Structure formats: C-alpha cells, structure tokens
Length: 250
Image (cartoon, rainbow, N blue to C red; front, side, top):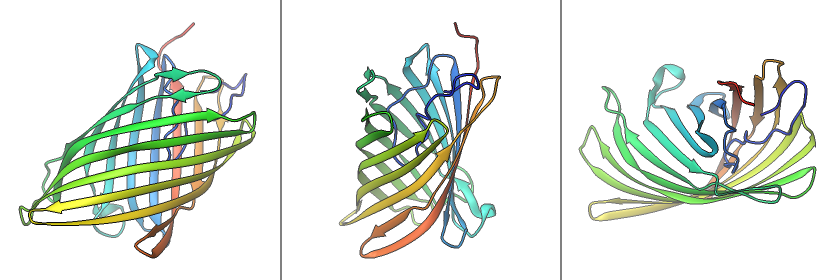
C-alpha cells in the first residue's frame, strides 16, 4: 500500500504468481483480472477482495471467477465461489512466507454445465534480492470433484501447481514482471483416467497511481504464452487493483 506523500514499491499485484504479502491492518484490496485470447475474445474474468483479519498476520479473501462458454461477455457464468484464508508465517526484510488454504464452493444455477467443489493448499514464498529485484516461488495443488449437469458423470480432478516469478523494479511506480507457471492435472472418471500438463510464460508490466486519500490504483498488462501437449497459444491479461484504507489506523 502506498500513499501519495510517500511512494512505496508495488508489492502484492502479480497476475498468475502469488506474492506472500498479506494485507496491512485497516487496508482492503479489490482486484479485477480479465483474460482474453489472441483474438481479444474474453475467456475468463475474476473479482477478488482481500481483507486483513484483526491484523496483517491473518487475511481473508474471496474470489468470484467468471468463465466463458460462448464468445463474449454474454456467455460467461459464475463458475465457483472461492474462499481463502492466508497466514503470514514469516514477514521480514529478507523473507516472506504466507501459506493459504482455500475452499472451492459450487454454484447451483440454471445453465451451468458442471458443478465443481474442492480444496486448495498453496505455499507462496517471496524473497527480496536487492533494491531492484524480487523473486516469488509458488507450490501447491487443488483437489476437486466435478459433476456434469447434462450427463451426471462425476470426475475427480487433482492439479499440482508450481511457479516462479522475477520482478524488476526500476522505480517505485513501474515494474516489469516475468512469471512462469507449471501445472499437472489428472482427471479420473469411473474406470478411466487422463492427464495433461502445461507451462505458461507471462511477461508483463504494472504501474501505480497514488492519491492523497490513501487510494492506490495499480493497472497492469501481460501477454501469457501457454504451451500444452506440444501446442502453444498466446493471449492477454488485463489487471486492475484498487487498494484503500477502510478504517483509521495510527
């Protein structure tokens, strides 16, 4: 969180890789992330709010992900309700570590093709290297159960995730990002199973606008390139964050 009087480095505004910085006491963050394919057709959109609980050591957040079943925003539907709790286990100048546990809740609405529920465990680690560079390391996975509304077929999906990002900070107001995310997914259906893996490289940038009121706006843009099963595709990620105090702090 930065103020207009004292510009601070952008800290918790990555796109695909999670940074291990909890929200400060009395500060809330609203995050919008839009993902589009190479033809600028929307593929997914998510809205997230992050709240400190009593102090910066405990953080609660929720996410509302929209995914597309048709071209454009009109074909999008709410996929799940995602509830997160994160604990700032370590937080100092040399190392930040904040494990997270997540509940993935199904949404039962007309027109939704599948119902998905499960849990996710994630371990984000952030290491400041020097004044200009910071590294983030992620590891974790989720375990979900999915049921098709049309066929009634049930699937068990296990996904492991690992990631790395390097962020270059030439100034407090502008950062360059290079993110790498690797995922392995196994799907089991009755007597059959299948697996896929993918690697995503996501180069991009983020900047910041600070206001005297304490409001901080962080827009960003990246161009993810995903390689899966020998094929590759590129797209765009548009990021926008609003961060501001919701109570007076001393």
